[in-house]
Image 1 (cartoon, rainbow, N blue to C red):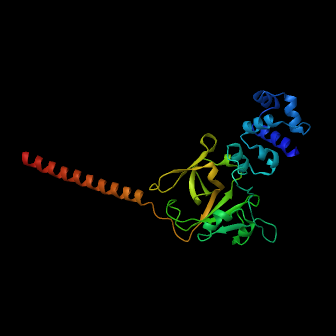
Image 2: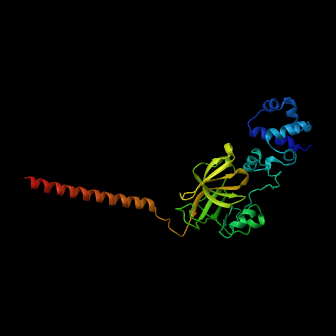
Image 3: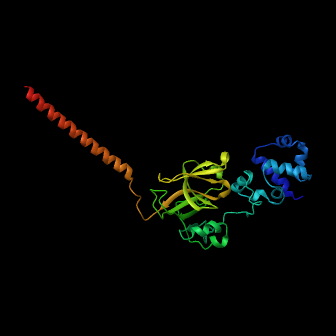
Length: 278
Protein backbone atom coordinates (compact mmCIF):
# COMPACT_ATOMS: atom_id res chain seq x y z
CA UNK A 1 0.00 0.00 0.00
CA UNK A 2 1.27 3.47 -0.90
CA UNK A 3 2.47 5.62 2.02
CA UNK A 4 0.16 8.34 0.64
CA UNK A 5 -2.84 6.55 2.17
CA UNK A 6 -1.66 6.88 5.76
CA UNK A 7 -0.67 10.51 5.26
CA UNK A 8 -4.06 11.25 3.73
CA UNK A 9 -5.95 9.71 6.63
CA UNK A 10 -3.89 11.68 9.13
CA UNK A 11 -4.35 14.96 7.22
CA UNK A 12 -8.12 14.50 6.94
CA UNK A 13 -8.42 13.57 10.60
CA UNK A 14 -6.54 16.68 11.70
CA UNK A 15 -8.56 18.93 9.40
CA UNK A 16 -11.64 17.72 11.27
CA UNK A 17 -9.89 18.22 14.62
CA UNK A 18 -10.44 14.56 15.50
CA UNK A 19 -8.20 12.33 17.58
CA UNK A 20 -7.31 8.77 16.67
CA UNK A 21 -9.62 7.64 19.47
CA UNK A 22 -12.50 9.64 17.93
CA UNK A 23 -12.09 7.97 14.54
CA UNK A 24 -11.52 4.52 16.02
CA UNK A 25 -14.71 4.71 18.09
CA UNK A 26 -16.75 6.00 15.14
CA UNK A 27 -15.54 3.16 12.90
CA UNK A 28 -15.52 0.48 15.60
CA UNK A 29 -11.81 -0.28 15.28
CA UNK A 30 -8.87 -0.22 17.67
CA UNK A 31 -6.93 3.01 18.04
CA UNK A 32 -3.68 1.11 17.55
CA UNK A 33 -5.01 -0.23 14.24
CA UNK A 34 -5.76 3.28 12.99
CA UNK A 35 -2.37 4.46 14.21
CA UNK A 36 -0.77 1.65 12.21
CA UNK A 37 -2.59 2.82 9.06
CA UNK A 38 -1.46 6.42 9.55
CA UNK A 39 2.16 5.43 10.20
CA UNK A 40 2.31 3.01 7.28
CA UNK A 41 3.06 -0.05 9.41
CA UNK A 42 -0.32 -1.72 8.78
CA UNK A 43 -2.50 -2.11 5.70
CA UNK A 44 -6.30 -1.88 5.87
CA UNK A 45 -8.52 -4.56 4.39
CA UNK A 46 -11.36 -3.82 1.98
CA UNK A 47 -13.91 -3.27 4.75
CA UNK A 48 -11.66 -0.82 6.58
CA UNK A 49 -10.90 1.05 3.35
CA UNK A 50 -14.58 1.40 2.55
CA UNK A 51 -15.37 2.53 6.10
CA UNK A 52 -12.66 5.21 6.03
CA UNK A 53 -13.71 6.41 2.58
CA UNK A 54 -17.34 6.69 3.71
CA UNK A 55 -16.39 8.49 6.91
CA UNK A 56 -14.30 11.11 5.10
CA UNK A 57 -16.69 11.21 2.08
CA UNK A 58 -13.81 10.60 -0.33
CA UNK A 59 -13.38 7.78 -2.83
CA UNK A 60 -11.09 4.84 -2.07
CA UNK A 61 -9.16 5.57 -5.26
CA UNK A 62 -8.47 9.15 -4.17
CA UNK A 63 -7.39 8.07 -0.68
CA UNK A 64 -4.95 5.57 -2.17
CA UNK A 65 -3.49 7.44 -5.13
CA UNK A 66 -3.73 11.21 -4.58
CA UNK A 67 -1.39 13.10 -2.25
CA UNK A 68 -3.94 15.35 -0.58
CA UNK A 69 -1.21 17.48 1.00
CA UNK A 70 -0.52 18.93 -2.47
CA UNK A 71 -4.06 20.21 -2.91
CA UNK A 72 -5.17 23.78 -2.20
CA UNK A 73 -7.59 24.37 0.65
CA UNK A 74 -10.38 25.08 -1.83
CA UNK A 75 -9.84 21.71 -3.52
CA UNK A 76 -9.72 19.88 -0.18
CA UNK A 77 -12.90 21.70 0.80
CA UNK A 78 -14.64 20.39 -2.32
CA UNK A 79 -13.44 16.86 -1.63
CA UNK A 80 -14.64 16.98 1.97
CA UNK A 81 -18.05 18.21 0.89
CA UNK A 82 -18.76 15.38 -1.49
CA UNK A 83 -17.38 16.69 -4.78
CA UNK A 84 -14.45 14.45 -5.67
CA UNK A 85 -12.85 16.06 -8.71
CA UNK A 86 -10.88 12.88 -9.39
CA UNK A 87 -13.96 10.65 -9.44
CA UNK A 88 -15.87 13.12 -11.64
CA UNK A 89 -13.18 13.25 -14.28
CA UNK A 90 -11.71 16.57 -13.28
CA UNK A 91 -8.02 17.36 -13.06
CA UNK A 92 -6.04 18.80 -10.20
CA UNK A 93 -6.15 22.55 -10.81
CA UNK A 94 -3.32 24.55 -9.32
CA UNK A 95 -3.46 28.31 -9.90
CA UNK A 96 -1.49 29.08 -13.03
CA UNK A 97 0.37 32.37 -12.87
CA UNK A 98 3.15 34.37 -14.52
CA UNK A 99 6.05 36.47 -13.21
CA UNK A 100 8.09 39.35 -14.61
CA UNK A 101 11.86 39.48 -15.22
CA UNK A 102 12.42 40.14 -11.51
CA UNK A 103 10.37 37.09 -10.52
CA UNK A 104 7.55 39.31 -9.26
CA UNK A 105 3.96 38.15 -9.72
CA UNK A 106 2.25 39.74 -12.71
CA UNK A 107 -1.34 40.90 -12.74
CA UNK A 108 -2.82 39.10 -15.73
CA UNK A 109 -5.58 40.89 -17.65
CA UNK A 110 -8.67 39.11 -18.98
CA UNK A 111 -10.55 41.43 -21.31
CA UNK A 112 -14.10 40.98 -22.53
CA UNK A 113 -13.01 39.00 -25.60
CA UNK A 114 -10.76 36.66 -23.56
CA UNK A 115 -13.34 35.96 -20.84
CA UNK A 116 -14.99 33.11 -22.78
CA UNK A 117 -11.64 31.35 -23.22
CA UNK A 118 -10.76 31.85 -19.56
CA UNK A 119 -13.61 29.58 -18.48
CA UNK A 120 -11.81 26.59 -19.99
CA UNK A 121 -8.22 27.88 -20.07
CA UNK A 122 -7.85 29.23 -16.52
CA UNK A 123 -5.70 26.25 -15.50
CA UNK A 124 -3.75 25.98 -18.79
CA UNK A 125 -0.23 27.50 -18.52
CA UNK A 126 -0.13 27.99 -22.30
CA UNK A 127 -3.29 30.07 -22.15
CA UNK A 128 -2.31 32.12 -19.09
CA UNK A 129 1.18 32.99 -20.34
CA UNK A 130 -0.12 34.81 -23.44
CA UNK A 131 -2.45 37.08 -21.48
CA UNK A 132 -1.41 40.74 -21.20
CA UNK A 133 0.06 41.69 -17.82
CA UNK A 134 0.86 44.76 -15.77
CA UNK A 135 1.94 45.81 -12.27
CA UNK A 136 0.35 48.00 -9.62
CA UNK A 137 2.95 49.18 -7.08
CA UNK A 138 0.42 49.91 -4.34
CA UNK A 139 -0.76 46.27 -4.11
CA UNK A 140 0.88 43.74 -1.78
CA UNK A 141 3.75 41.79 -3.30
CA UNK A 142 2.80 38.79 -1.13
CA UNK A 143 -0.61 38.26 -2.71
CA UNK A 144 -1.86 37.19 -6.11
CA UNK A 145 -4.04 39.53 -8.18
CA UNK A 146 -5.80 39.31 -11.53
CA UNK A 147 -7.85 41.89 -13.47
CA UNK A 148 -11.09 41.13 -15.32
CA UNK A 149 -13.17 43.33 -17.60
CA UNK A 150 -16.80 43.22 -16.54
CA UNK A 151 -19.82 43.78 -18.78
CA UNK A 152 -23.37 44.85 -18.13
CA UNK A 153 -25.05 47.04 -15.54
CA UNK A 154 -25.74 44.55 -12.75
CA UNK A 155 -23.06 46.10 -10.52
CA UNK A 156 -23.88 49.78 -11.05
CA UNK A 157 -22.61 52.30 -10.06
CA UNK A 158 -19.48 50.44 -11.28
CA UNK A 159 -19.77 51.16 -15.03
CA UNK A 160 -20.03 48.65 -17.85
CA UNK A 161 -16.66 47.49 -19.23
CA UNK A 162 -14.75 48.52 -16.07
CA UNK A 163 -11.51 46.72 -15.22
CA UNK A 164 -11.99 44.97 -11.86
CA UNK A 165 -8.99 43.64 -9.94
CA UNK A 166 -9.33 40.79 -7.46
CA UNK A 167 -7.11 39.07 -4.89
CA UNK A 168 -7.01 35.28 -5.19
CA UNK A 169 -8.95 33.50 -2.44
CA UNK A 170 -7.41 30.13 -1.73
CA UNK A 171 -9.54 29.20 1.28
CA UNK A 172 -13.22 29.56 0.40
CA UNK A 173 -14.14 29.54 4.08
CA UNK A 174 -12.80 33.11 4.08
CA UNK A 175 -15.44 34.35 1.63
CA UNK A 176 -17.23 37.02 3.65
CA UNK A 177 -20.88 37.98 3.39
CA UNK A 178 -21.74 41.30 1.75
CA UNK A 179 -18.34 41.64 0.05
CA UNK A 180 -17.82 41.73 -3.71
CA UNK A 181 -15.98 38.93 -5.54
CA UNK A 182 -15.04 37.95 -9.06
CA UNK A 183 -16.21 34.35 -9.34
CA UNK A 184 -15.40 31.80 -12.05
CA UNK A 185 -17.98 29.05 -12.45
CA UNK A 186 -18.10 26.00 -14.67
CA UNK A 187 -21.40 26.95 -16.31
CA UNK A 188 -21.56 30.75 -16.36
CA UNK A 189 -17.90 31.76 -16.59
CA UNK A 190 -16.77 35.02 -14.96
CA UNK A 191 -19.22 36.85 -12.70
CA UNK A 192 -18.80 39.94 -10.53
CA UNK A 193 -21.20 39.84 -7.58
CA UNK A 194 -21.70 40.44 -3.88
CA UNK A 195 -21.49 37.08 -2.11
CA UNK A 196 -23.34 35.41 0.73
CA UNK A 197 -21.36 32.40 1.95
CA UNK A 198 -23.50 29.32 2.60
CA UNK A 199 -20.86 26.76 1.57
CA UNK A 200 -20.62 25.10 4.98
CA UNK A 201 -24.34 24.90 5.66
CA UNK A 202 -25.84 24.46 2.20
CA UNK A 203 -22.92 23.89 -0.19
CA UNK A 204 -23.60 27.05 -2.22
CA UNK A 205 -22.95 30.75 -2.62
CA UNK A 206 -25.82 33.19 -2.94
CA UNK A 207 -24.87 35.99 -5.33
CA UNK A 208 -26.37 39.48 -5.31
CA UNK A 209 -26.12 42.45 -7.70
CA UNK A 210 -25.71 46.06 -6.64
CA UNK A 211 -28.36 46.98 -9.19
CA UNK A 212 -31.73 46.19 -7.51
CA UNK A 213 -33.28 45.36 -10.89
CA UNK A 214 -31.36 42.04 -10.88
CA UNK A 215 -32.52 39.10 -8.77
CA UNK A 216 -30.18 37.08 -6.54
CA UNK A 217 -29.29 33.50 -7.43
CA UNK A 218 -27.19 30.58 -6.14
CA UNK A 219 -24.08 28.78 -7.36
CA UNK A 220 -23.37 25.25 -6.12
CA UNK A 221 -19.98 24.38 -4.71
CA UNK A 222 -19.35 21.84 -7.47
CA UNK A 223 -19.66 24.60 -10.08
CA UNK A 224 -17.09 26.92 -8.48
CA UNK A 225 -13.64 27.11 -10.01
CA UNK A 226 -11.97 30.32 -8.78
CA UNK A 227 -12.80 33.12 -6.36
CA UNK A 228 -11.13 36.55 -6.33
CA UNK A 229 -11.88 39.17 -3.66
CA UNK A 230 -12.67 42.59 -5.13
CA UNK A 231 -9.84 45.09 -4.54
CA UNK A 232 -10.54 48.03 -6.87
CA UNK A 233 -11.69 48.95 -10.34
CA UNK A 234 -10.47 51.16 -13.19
CA UNK A 235 -12.83 52.90 -15.58
CA UNK A 236 -12.69 55.72 -18.11
CA UNK A 237 -16.29 56.61 -17.24
CA UNK A 238 -17.66 58.42 -14.23
CA UNK A 239 -20.16 56.39 -12.20
CA UNK A 240 -23.77 57.18 -12.98
CA UNK A 241 -25.39 59.59 -10.50
CA UNK A 242 -27.73 58.12 -7.96
CA UNK A 243 -30.86 59.15 -9.84
CA UNK A 244 -33.46 57.66 -7.48
CA UNK A 245 -32.00 59.58 -4.53
CA UNK A 246 -31.75 62.79 -6.57
CA UNK A 247 -35.29 62.41 -7.79
CA UNK A 248 -36.50 61.80 -4.26
CA UNK A 249 -34.71 64.91 -3.02
CA UNK A 250 -36.21 66.96 -5.86
CA UNK A 251 -39.70 65.64 -5.15
CA UNK A 252 -39.29 66.44 -1.46
CA UNK A 253 -38.16 69.99 -2.24
CA UNK A 254 -41.13 70.46 -4.58
CA UNK A 255 -43.49 69.12 -1.92
CA UNK A 256 -42.04 71.50 0.67
CA UNK A 257 -42.50 74.43 -1.67
CA UNK A 258 -46.08 73.36 -2.37
CA UNK A 259 -46.86 73.09 1.35
CA UNK A 260 -45.30 76.47 1.95
CA UNK A 261 -47.46 77.93 -0.82
CA UNK A 262 -50.61 76.39 0.65
CA UNK A 263 -49.76 77.78 4.08
CA UNK A 264 -49.15 81.23 2.64
CA UNK A 265 -52.45 81.08 0.72
CA UNK A 266 -54.34 79.95 3.82
CA UNK A 267 -52.78 82.72 5.86
CA UNK A 268 -53.84 85.30 3.26
CA UNK A 269 -57.38 83.93 3.10
CA UNK A 270 -57.56 83.91 6.90
CA UNK A 271 -56.52 87.56 7.05
CA UNK A 272 -59.15 88.51 4.44
CA UNK A 273 -61.82 86.65 6.40
CA UNK A 274 -60.85 88.48 9.60
CA UNK A 275 -60.99 91.80 7.78
CA UNK A 276 -64.54 91.07 6.54
CA UNK A 277 -65.72 90.25 10.07
CA UNK A 278 -64.46 93.57 11.28
